[in-house]
Every structure is written in structure tokens, then in C-alpha cells.
Length: 184
Image (tube, rainbow, N blue to C red):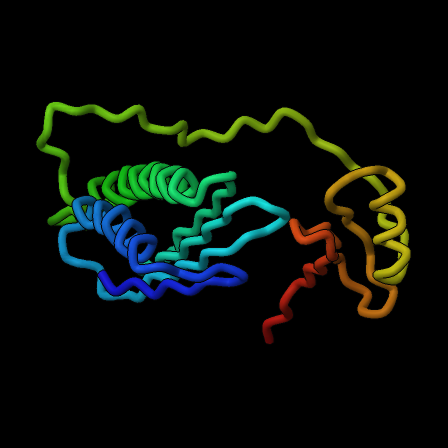
């Protein structure tokens, strides 16, 4: 596994680098062949919290996890746990799909140890459905409306592009805009 570690507002010491590599290399046991993709790790300090972001590109999916804690080593442990849950969930879905389609071999190693994992639910329960009229507005007005209702995102009809957009509040306190891509 190739691991690229970079620090932002934080010096990546050799001990920290070794700890990240040791913990992330534990994930190799879930794969039949060693990962050939480059795992991206970003260590930073955000609002006094030690933050780690990890992105693992796999065929057809990107596993990504982020964790914040007052201790960087705790953040690393938590992010690896989160990635393990994602891998197990993806592994279960992928292997089920291969079995249903008559595939010859599993993409992931089959667990042979007596340890059993609690699999996360594959079904998603929809608990609420809302409908509302989308008033045409510009991005600035949408941000004001979002802040008015106290939500972290706001769906609106962009008067400049005549498409449905979403504005959202980022963790750094700034705002983001999601626009649909138009394929022709």
C-alpha cells in the first residue's frame, strides 16, 4: 500500500508517520491483492482539534473517512475503525452482487478467523419526505435563507442557471455550492 501523508498546520514527525502507516497497513488484510492505488492522508489542526482525512481509491468506489479529536493518535485509531466498517460494508455488497451474478471469485478475502463482525444495515430507512416549491433566487439569497432557517444546507432554484442547486455550510465556516453536471 502506497501511503502519501501530508501535514497542514502540523509537522508530520517520523513517529506520527510510522503510526499512520502501521494502522493503515492493517487494512491490507481485507483485500485479496495488495492495494496498488495511492492512499492519501492529510493531518491537520482545525479549530484546536487534531484532524485526519484518509482517501482510498478502489475500483468503482472511493473510501473516505475523516475524524477529529483532541489527540492525533486517537483520531488515527477512530478513522481506521471507520474505514474498516466501510470496507466490510462494501465487501459484503460486492461479494453478494458477484454471487447473485454467478461470479467465480470474491474480490475480497473471506474471513476465516472465528471473529465475527456486526455488519451495518444495508437497508436505509426513509423517515421523512418533504415537498416544497423552489423559489428562483441567487446564491447569496440562498445562503441568507439557509442561515435564517438554521440548517446546514439549502436547496434552491438558481435564477442564474435555471437549475436546482444546493448551498451548504462547510466545517471551516465557509460555504459551498453543489451544481448538477450537464451531460450531452
